[in-house]
Amino acid sequence: MSRYAKDRARERIAGLAGEGRDLVTFWRAAGEAVSSAVPHFLAPCWFTFDPASLLVTSHYQDGLPEIPPEWLAHEYFEDDFHKMADVARSPRGVSTLHEATGGDPSRSRAWTLYMQPYGAEQELLMALRTGSGTTWGMLGLYREAGSRAFDDDELEFLRGVSGHLAEGARRGLLVGEASDPDGPDAPGLVVLRDDWSVESLTPGVERWLSELPGGDWEARGVLPPSVLAVAGRALRTAEGVHAPGDVALARVLSRDGRWMVLHGASLVASGTRRVAVIVEPAHPARISPLLMAAYGLTDREQDVTRLVLRGEATTGIATRLSVSPHTVQQHLKSIFEKTGVRSRRDLVGKVFFSHYEPRVRDNERRVARDEPIRGGPFPARARP
Image 1 (cartoon, rainbow, N blue to C red):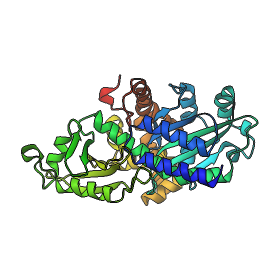
Image 2: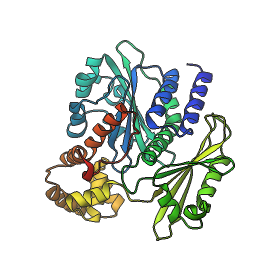
Image 3: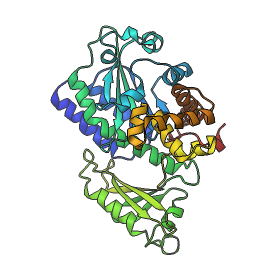
Image 4: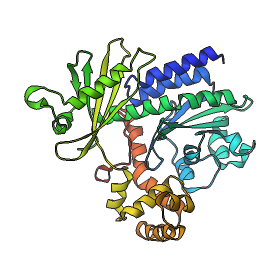
């Protein structure tokens, strides 16, 4: 693949990430651009993660509408090479199964059970990681038997577009939640024209606008200054379809004393200059209140659990929390008792299958109905 073709693919992916597309539309278009630079077998396999836990919240692959339950059980209950969480935590963020197995993929049980039957010989996994280091998902690419190995140039290209793919995924999830709220604290979306007039509002966003200081949307149609400021910053960085600019961010203290987060992203796909501003309440990692409600974990036990879900060892947890390894072990003992498990692996599996696997299945149904994909664990109150 020529340098020119890869540069064009990179520009295409960057442009797609700035268009504010729904997630599946973004996946499909981005997949075409990736395929033009990194040829592969079968359709790209896309996942979204909850950044707090690195657990899967959705899966999309053209031709495979439902991910096999036995694959999920293998991912979260069994030891093997090339697990997604391991790749997501790695410094490089991209890896091949051949690298992980020392050139012998038959050492991997997943290769035997879930790749060979589909004709796949090689697997490449890449974390979708923003510039700040937050991981929003994973891309899987495959090659059939007899194909050449993924090379360093291809891995370097993918690392170069990882941030754009992560931003596109993040925007897609936010836009989806704003347009089809999952609960009372779901984000709201305001789309502005380049003359600052309002083109559209999603249901419920008026509530967030009324909480932001300085505006009076309900009575006089005056937007809060923070919304206009974020929109202006996003538009200033946009130069065209292939250079949609940066996501502008702001944290604003609301009238009732809680923090709100505003995301501004230019929308330049149609040739007109518009900007979307997503408004949402700032909240801690989603897994925390969920675990508190479900299992009665203390704040520190939630901290330990979150790091266990992300694959941290005892020494790593101790370093991050500035406690001794013995203290970590004591917290783990309490966590195991409260959640009814006997090991870290069982804890990860229980959290995933209790709170995240229902979200994966819900998102599969939503894709089939052309509804937006949602992130985060499935709310217990709404579980089918």
